[in-house]
Amino acid sequence: MRAPGERWRPAGAALWLLLLLLLGATESVRRAQPLRRYTPDWPSLDSRPLPSWFDEAKFGVFIHWGVFSVPAWGSEWFWWNWQGEGRPQYQRFMRDNYPPGFSYADFGPQFTARFFHPEEWADLFQAAGAKYVVLTTKHHEGFTNWPSPVSWNWNSKDVGPHRDLVGELGTALRKRNIRYGLYHSLLEWFHPLYLLDKKNGFKTQYFVGAKTMPELYDLVISYKPDLIWSDGEWECPDTYWNSTNFLSWLYNDSPVKDEVVVNDRWGQNCSCHHGGYYNCEDKFKPQSLPDHKWEMCTSIDKFSWGYRRDMAMSDVTEESEIISVRAPLSFLLSLCLFSPGTGSDSQFGRQLSSEHWTNQRWIDCSHLPRKTSCSWEMAEHQRRGHLCLQTVAGAMGKEHNICMVYLKGISCLCHFSALARKWSLKP
Image 1 (tube, rainbow, N blue to C red):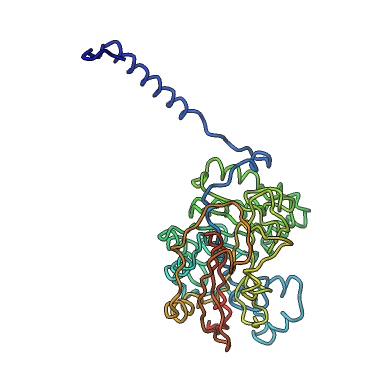
Image 2: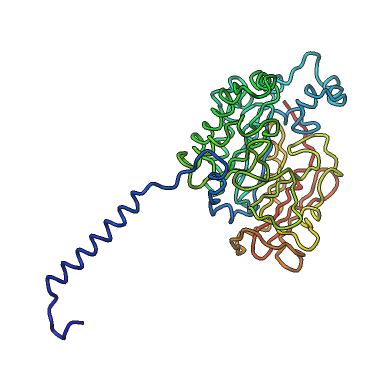
């Protein structure tokens, strides 16, 4: 300590300056060190921590929408059930409703999306408390909801809407700080190259090189998704799909390398073992708390993930079933993801927002506090949390509930049961 009145010595100032320079040099060296890079193998890829936003996003909305929304009958597996398996009820449906020779490709121009208003959809999801939304970019039928450069004349820009559905919804969601996820099917039931690889026992990869991988890279570069929800992996190992090479690039060099989240459907050997978070299987309900981050993905319709005209009210999951997901003692829940169905012309956005949403005085629960948590105990919601309930009038003579539950301050579930109404489809 200096004596009173003693002046600062130049030598002391020089020492402080030298120390600051050394600290600056150390920080520069630290920043210059290369970040960790993930190699294309599961031990390395599985070691990547999940981005923190996914722990905070407890509720998401899953939208199944594609050409299958035009026949809107049976399920989104319409084409496979009709011509892959040749189920009699599907063949009868086609004979009764369409002329001879009508092909699945003929449904394409009827997928108009004429009432698709992405801003209204995004408002709906935001008011419901959804923290992320997942849209089908391509289901197993192969039709892409964006202008894929390797899906000529079988995409939403060339056929049907003549719009980039993936891009439009993403823009609207990001204005509201809602995370955007993209569902993508690795396989395509009837693509000639996929059928050729299957004939070759998947020892060739013509389809992967010409279709699957170009589309995945294009989706990431073009739309910068926060989440990739992979599907359609079950017939082949991850080595056929080149999954580890893609994920290595995604984690190391892609424009979303620091924020992107992926699921576990990257090969028939991957589910519940490899990937980012686990789905394990559709509507998976573990009996105890898994050691790994997981997502419960389920649907309102018990038999379909998308809109279908033949849905009966008995096919709609009751609110109590959705909210009271049980385990022997308590249910440990990370996240729930639901699938609202939409018709071919996107009457979902028009009907729900204008007739139900705006006029029914939705109880906005978005102001309630939320906690960040990887997992938490779900008990009786009436006792342990806040229930926000809104009743809407359905078109089938019964009132249905749209509800959201907050347990311990965490948003959990939302039931879009107004989507149960049967809308007529007009080409």
